[in-house]
Image 1 (tube, one colour):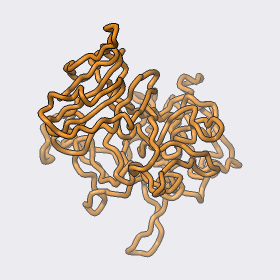
Image 2 (cartoon, one colour):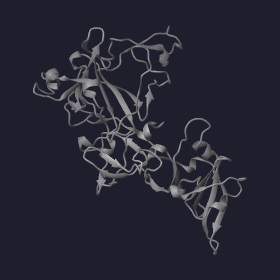
Image 3 (cartoon, rainbow, N blue to C red):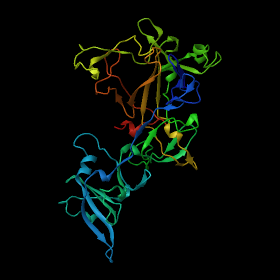
Length: 418
């Protein structure tokens, strides 16, 4: 079990801190106390992404409306150049993966079989290839998307309910829920995220650990091997905080890394001495220095700040890591082969530090600083300005894409650009 907890208690704000997305919750005492009262008993980290982009965001040109013998409109054919440009940008990967019709409550009809193939031509004969609504076609030569809608419905209006699907929202369909993982339809080749998989639209997604009454069904869970990488297993909560009002010496729950207690830090091998040594897994405080290269002499400029190894951010910093690889398990399953909800892992790793101050000007505040890394595919870390994040030896931090519970990687290891 990689879960652990810690305590922020230097100022008037006092709280237990957990490492599964729900920083503060009712299950761990104290829960967001200021003075004598619990003001913030539930604080959770949330990350969300859209499932589609409505066609109303693009310009569409009407080409033809097909009518029945009585003159009533059956379907209309429309073309868009800027929707194509959004789908197929001049550089980089494609932005969308499919078209969704009859949008409603972030669900709809995904109909890949309704794609028409344009053989090429002068681009004036598109309506000839359509015979009903909810069909679509690409003209790669003239860089246009062509769709058909019900009656005279205009795709520039949201009530036409057509959207372009982001690639992460089209995912292999569930076959069954097993004890240790969910089993998906990876097609005849049994390779994940390939063309023969049976895909379904999962929609928008929000990972959170707040709107749930079962602690094991949270979207965020402690990152795998947190008990080795971001804290340790030799000492527990009772060993460190047994003399506080919050717990007792018999509490064997694992304890997060606290800056003031090096015995809570994880261990790594010192190759020079051959000994295992404790190390601080989080980040250090920063100094403002106008003499740094690229500094614009503004405190808002990240180039004016330099990390100071060995100096902590606050009186007590508490470090934790969690990710969303298990978020699909929060979905309820109907008859074991159909999701009642369609949450899914995005491959996000969250590194967080909670800060507690005893000084008077900050004793009423609890800070949590957060760094989020997209590990849906193979990654190399960058800061908010796009600069490489380096290790102690000056090499950029890089790693493999996150492994899902069934042993696969998202998008066959290529991940997604959210």
